[in-house]
Length: 406
Ligand code: FAD
Ligand code: NAD
Image (cartoon, rainbow, N blue to C red; front, side, top):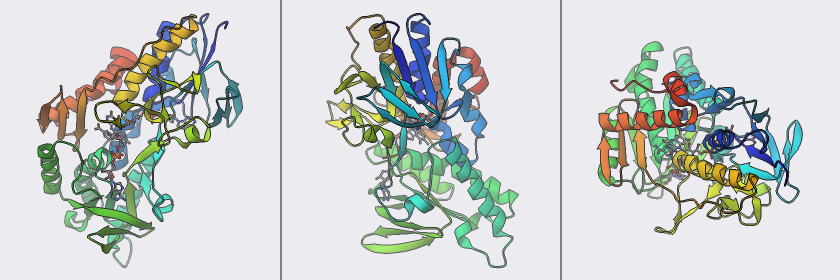
C-alpha cells in the first residue's frame, strides 16, 4: 500500500490523542491523515458537569482543534459522521464521503436511557458542550421565572439527578456550590431549592471504597443535597419524575431532571455492522476490530475485558488516552509496512471524583485513599497533566486549573 489513507472519526480524548501522536510519528509523505469531528473544537468531557452546573464556562472546557493539530500535516474535516461501512471502507458524512485504508473509530458515548418512559423527551443529559450549556441555561431560566409568576411553582426549584455514579455525584457536587450563588442572584431562599440524587443501588458510587463514599455523602448532604438510594427512576414527565423504592412510588415535581445513570457507545458503531458486545467493539489486544483488521476502535466505543474481574474496563478518559497512544503506534507501524503490532495493557492510575472545585475523593497509586483538599488538588493535577500531554506547556498555561486554594 502506497501512502495509506488514515481516517480518524471523533476528536474527543481518543481521537485527538491518536491524531496528535500520529502527526509526530508520520510525515506528509508517509500517510494521508484525515480527522473528522462535528465541531472545530475539542472538549474535555470530564469537565462538562461543571459547565452544566454553571461553575465553569464552556470556553474553558473547549479548545480549538487547530491549537493542537497541525493542519499542514492533518486534513481536518468539520462534519458529522452519518454512518460508516467497514465492508466498503467508506464513511458517509452529512456533507460528503470519505474512503480509507485504515479507520480509527473514536466517536465516544451517548446516554443509555434503558427505555424508561419520558426520559428521552423530558430529561437532560451531560453529553457535550451544547447539552451541558442547555442545562445551565434551563436552571437559570427556571430560577428567573420563579419570582415572576403569581403562583409559585416548586417544580422550578427542584433539580433531580438520576444516577449516583461518578457523573451524577460530580454534578450534584457542582450544583451544591452553584445554587447558593443563583439564590442570591434571583432572590430565592436557599431552603426553597432541592437537589435530589436518585440512585437505584443501595449506595451511591456502588463498588467504590465505602469510607470515601460515606465522606462524599456527608460532605454533599452538609451542602443540602438529598439522596434517595435504593430508588429507581421509573418515569419522567415535563413537570415531574416518578421513582420507586421498596415497591412504593413517589412523584417529585420538577422541571429539571438530569439523567446521569448510564452511557453506551455511540450507536453508529452498532449500526455499522461491526460485531458488538454491549454495543461496543470488543477489540483485539492490538485495538483492531476482530473482523476488520484495518479498523481500530478506541475510547467509549471499544470494549476490553479486565481478565482479573471478568468484566469490561469502565469507559473513562484515562483508558481512552492510553488506547490512543497504542493505536497511533500501531498505525505508524502499519503505514511503514510493518506488521509487529504492540498489544494494549491498561495501566490503572486510580480514580478521583470531584465534589465541587474545592473537595474530592479518590483512590490513587494502587490503594492510597485521598479526600478533601488533597484529593481536589490531585484531580486538578490529573486534568493539567492531560493538557500538558496534548498541547505542551502553552496549552497547560492557557487552559489548566491552578485554583488549588479555593
Ligand atoms: P469523547 O471524549 O466523548 O469524544 C467523542 C468525540 O466524537 C467528540 O468530540 C464528539 O463531538 C465527536 N462525535 C460524536 N459523534 C460524532 C459524529 N456523528 N460525527 C462527528 N463527530 C462526532 N473519565 C475519566 O477518566 N475521568 C474523569 O474524571 C471523568 N469524568 C467525567 C465526567 C463527566 C461529566 C462525564 C460525562 C464523563 C467523565 N469521564 C471521566 C468519562 C470520559 O469522559 C469518557 O470515557 C471519555 O470522554 C471517552 O472518550 P472518547 O474519545 O471515547 O469520547
Ligand atoms: P455509571 O454507569 O457509572 O453510573 C450510573 C449509575 O446510575 C449507577 O450507579 C446505576 O446504579 C444508576 N442507575 C441506573 N439506572 C438507574 C435508574 N433507573 N434509577 C436510578 N439510578 C439508576 O455512569 P456514569 O456515572 O455516567 O459514568 C460513566 C463512565 O464515566 C464510568 O465509566 C465512570 O467511571 C466514568 N466517569 C468517571 C469519572 C471520574 O473518574 N471522576 C467521573 C464521571 C464519569
